[in-house]
Image (cartoon, rainbow, N blue to C red; front, side, top):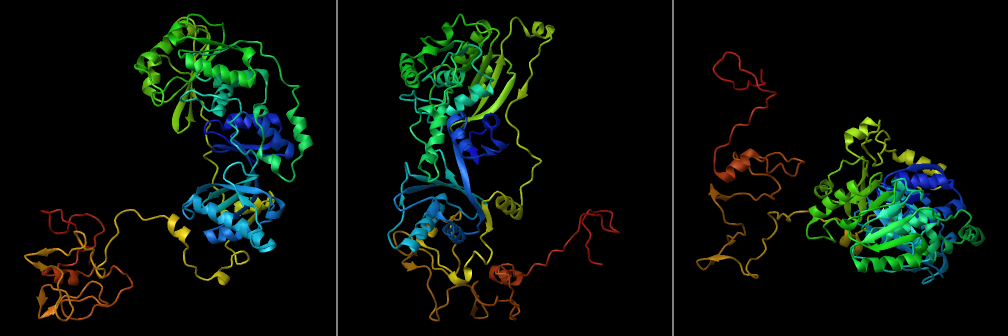
Length: 560
């Protein structure tokens, strides 16, 4: 199975899955692969705080063109997953030079599934297509020519917990907020403060971590509940198991300068049912003058993008000033977008990690706040362990060959077929096929202006009028139908699209298989330009002084 997440949170999600009992957990880029049974699938959806969705692969194969993709998808046993009274949707993720448009991939896969049922049950007897809230959600991942068909077990993205009833202008994603808290090491065993809490996402996620409340408890449904093999009894047992929940022992405090933001946070906190553990205040960052001892500060200040203040430098200077004077003994984690703003905090970060907040590449920084100056801090045997906390990709791992990839897929029970072998590809039956309208619409278009070849008529100018000068139009022709031009010996020059290029001595030059050979025929070009043929340049291997001539550095010829 595959758990999707944000870039930078792969290590956190892998640790979560390992704690839940997943096997063969491997972190990738924006995903973590793992193995387990249906119970593990339900737990991953219900308990993981940093997963966006959980995919269950059902088939893997290679396909080099859309027709092969169609054939391979149509050969799958869709009756085990769908019926005519169900609906389905397709979510494509495409990174390929062959499949250049994800929407066309959606059409071809949809056609294959529909034709599978109509070929067996008759015209019109097929499952319906639904863009939102479909019964079965199919994920199609194409990497080059490698296709992975998966069932989306989550449905709506798992970051939509279900407790957010209102939001401020730029709220942080719930999965990202939980990931930052877990990355910071928060487990509910110390006070937590967010002095710029906005709609309260950090506060709610922190309360859920401190109380060990599963994030899926607020959701109304998951996509796997519509699957034919759904074990309702097993899922109800997992859902109603609250034996691991606990009561937080340390305060969770949030504040914001905006009364409107605090009102929105109160609504969300009430909806989540964690209000008894969270203290909210209307207070600007500059007014903080005390805080509980030995706590953690986590916040998401304005970036100057969607939310901005009149003086961003002054805001970040105030944050740094409050950290140094009020939050001594704290570990402060701040996510920011622009380094020029973060520098105004005036403190050296002990850790940095690259994270994405929506489409913005941000940086999460940890600041360790200590009493006195850094010299005294070092004299006590302590030091700032400056490091990059961004998960590092395994650069030693090479990309598997197609044969190795298919072999691994077969071992895992996902087919691993090669769609380009004669067994699966029916090229002889199909024959050459003219691209259909959808292919023409979504195929990649070449960049730049279209070149006009000499055998094409030039487009008219000035709303269809032919250009003229002195009452005579250009582009006239002789009575023999040949274009005007300079004549040599009473004969017009041959056009560039003639079958054989014209030469100065009247002999036909030998035909070349190179279509650009006519343009490279030096004698023919000289005839057009009405100049003497230039000598062919010598091919030289390098620059060296010619023998017998010490006055020049001209290169010597390779001819002997």
